[in-house]
Length: 383
Ligand code: HEC
Ligand code: HEC
Ligand code: HEC
Ligand code: HEC
Image 1 (cartoon, helix red, strand yellow):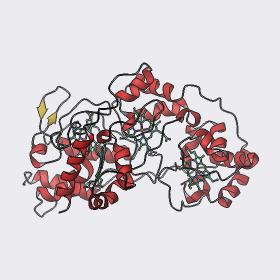
Image 2 (image 1 turned 90 degrees about the vertical axis):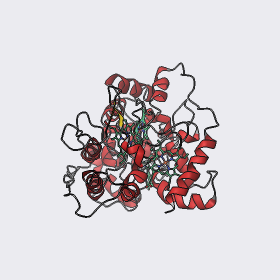
Image 3 (image 1 turned 135 degrees about the horizontal axis):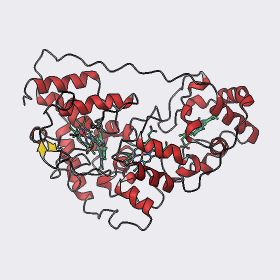
Image 4 (image 1 turned 30 degrees about the vertical axis):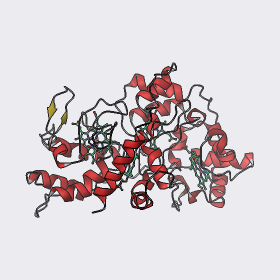
């Protein structure tokens, strides 16, 4: 069991990191920026005007520092952690987001986040955001939207040939191309969304001069010819798409016959997918994670999933009263299980009213992992 000691080393490092003051101390004058800092958007995204938070709060930045070896920890610890954190070390930069994204699309996306990048493990979390907050943030991110202009649909086949010739499928998924993506760059969007997200001029610019609309972007400049860029953009916007395949509903597996002890559930679920947002604040000093002490705009719910005792101690309801995580929720299943099932539904574009899917912003647990958790609860949550 490498995990225990490795986590203790991490706890000590977080403690050291917390000696630095938190960057978000004084609310800024700009109301849009103040809102972004209230929701702590900068824990995952680079933002104009907002410094990254202190390292103990910087979800993506800390993972990136570990993955690129710049995090101050023993080499052995870095080696152990890297395979776990490398897939969680990316999120798109929002610097200049309004140069490429439509304001209305941002607003709708904040209210109903969806998966845009098939090669990226994290997704935009479903935050507790009002329509007014979403509109204000979208206005702040896209202050001067570019007018749209038509792209010539008769160029689709020219664009398709260029798409093949430049091997755009090295990085991008795009159903309209009829080609399988080769590698899926973690930050490369599925191009089926571009027609809704981007004004025409931004699609052309993204292809011809990527840095002009994505200043922190990673797309190489492949096409310098304006006519070629317009044909590619027409292809991205107008190529016919098949309806997205409706993923089959996740099966709910029957309870296991064998005994299930806490150590197995902790290793497969809690310490892998939950701990970083639901930890004991005495251990992960100063923060304790957004699911425990609050963060990302959520009030603290006091849900500690870092130990057996923490899990038994429940969490605060909306009324501020502590209740068991295992009491039946609206569907009759234990509350904790309901959050896991809700996440699977969110991934297919749905939502369960009153239940936020967990793990927040991360892939739903497999049916086998949910079955393990349900079996452990049904067996009386043995140690
Ligand atoms: C826990 C990490 C996390 C937090 C906090 C977070 N985001 Fe995101 N956000 C992501 C990830 C990951 C993506 C990429 C999702 C995808 O491509 O499927 C994303 C995507 C986006 C996008 C689309 C950008 C693009 O290029 O596709 C916008 C806009 C956005 N977030 C705005 C916000 C705002 C505003 C906040 C604060 C209110 C916020 N995010 C908080 C992780 C986060
Ligand atoms: C101070 C650095 C640091 C910060 C801040 C941090 N993490 Fe981590 N994270 C790690 C390390 C180290 C690991 C690997 C632990 C291990 O391998 O035992 C990890 C692992 C994870 C994992 C488990 C991945 C797996 O497959 O095992 C998730 C999920 C995760 N982090 C999410 C988050 C989120 C969400 C945030 C922000 C709320 C966050 N982390 C903040 C350092 C950090
Ligand atoms: C090496 C990987 C790579 C290749 C090859 C590549 N792209 Fe990209 N592309 C990206 C990344 C990463 C982004 C996200 C923005 C950024 O980082 O600049 C992106 C963004 C885009 C966008 C914006 C989509 C959106 O919804 O935000 C379009 C359009 C696009 N690429 C078209 C193309 C076309 C057309 C080609 C072929 C000529 C191509 N790309 C080749 C990596 C790549
Ligand atoms: C990225 C951070 C994050 C991760 C990862 C995460 N949570 Fe949460 N969790 C939260 C936040 C934030 C809340 C508070 C949500 C709210 O108030 O609506 C929460 C709330 C909860 C609640 C209380 C929900 C309720 O309505 O009673 C449960 C139960 C829960 N999480 C379980 C889990 C489990 C189990 C996992 C791992 C499979 C997990 N969480 C992973 C952030 C996270």
